[in-house]
Image 1 (cartoon, helix red, strand yellow):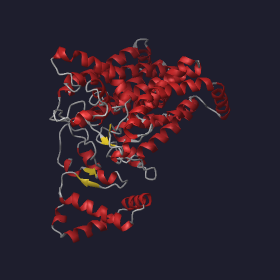
Image 2 (spheres, helix red, strand yellow):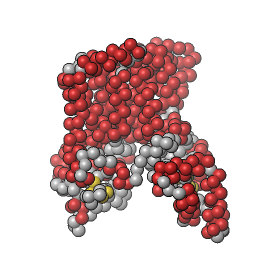
Image 3 (cartoon, rainbow, N blue to C red):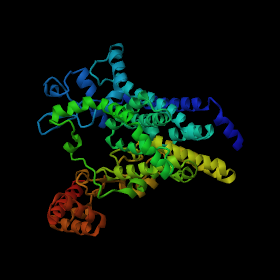
Image 4 (cartoon, rainbow, N blue to C red):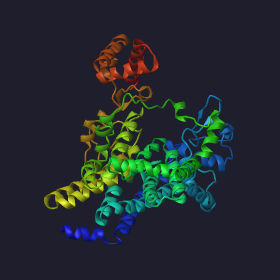
Length: 533
């Protein structure tokens, strides 16, 4: 097929509609092939599990049990089999760790399930399969919504063929696919779609600033931040979108000063979804602002970002498990040349978000396929990716052929590795170089995969100290030594590990703990972990 034919096919007026329909059908088939809403394994549900338990908790607590204090969980007749997770505040009250933003997004599908539960002869408890089914397909609704507005955003800056191809690449070539299907109730597909809408409204606001656009833009921004507070950094895009020079920056500042009344309306829209959250925090903690994550020891360590691990490691590297983003980053070069105003907004936002995410205590973002926190940014990264595709078309010839072969391969690799992850052939936290290449493009386990997986010590990681232990292999030589000899051996290993030694020094500086006391704590912890394998 010639370059001209490709352009004609993807430039057709109905091409984006067909691409969106294709993606949604593909996602839908994936959902029905796994039927996660029926895959409860004991107390671990197929959909309402892990973080989703907390995201979702507000809805059944308020509308089924009528008690946001969660005191009903102490009722002897109530079986809390992973229905509600909570921590205790200093006031002794139960607090849901996550904020309630996702419950807003879930709500239409929760109420639909609640109405239909008797039709399917299921109990209206908020946790039956009908509720889980509608959560999955709620995610499908939102991602379809996001795809539509992503195309509308892309076509503003790029030719229709490029915009449609980019839409297909984002939908098939990133872990947005995984988090729109296998774990569709997680936060990422929702924030992807909201960020697309935010950018679309942002462009509209600068084109036609008015009170409706101001309130709506603020409302969407507030909801995005309520779901994931780190996304407050979208203010970088809000301020610098399409600012391409120093003169344009000064004009932008003058424009914003002139629009202060509209900005105040935007702030009001931003705060609107936060009002119930403020009152909830006030009730459980005594303060309108409350860091609930502090209750579980979670923290950012900005003095110890794992930038290289975050981007390139076999454990979870962004470019390893979402290699399409390498092309998106390369696309920043042509984006600078042709859409400098987008470049100046995207680059600082991307750089700061990577720094922030790589500074989180669990820089690998828990058990996940790839760096799941970066799924939120796929709307932003679609723009430099489109610039890269445009560059390929402009180059033509061999560049275009080789480029598209590579793009097709990374799309295939993403779909295949998604399948591998779901089948347990890519571990959620423990991948190493040896394990990765042992199962690369393979459909079955091979010797050397499990034997080389290493998992972070989560207790130490919460302190900003990173130790990785083999998952299944026992340390047989260590067991042949006495406890004193074993700990001396580990002590020599710790002292010889420069990165670990730096982690210990940073920990001592942050906490005021003594170096010897800290060293003994780490050696004891490593010794116990290895001996108990």
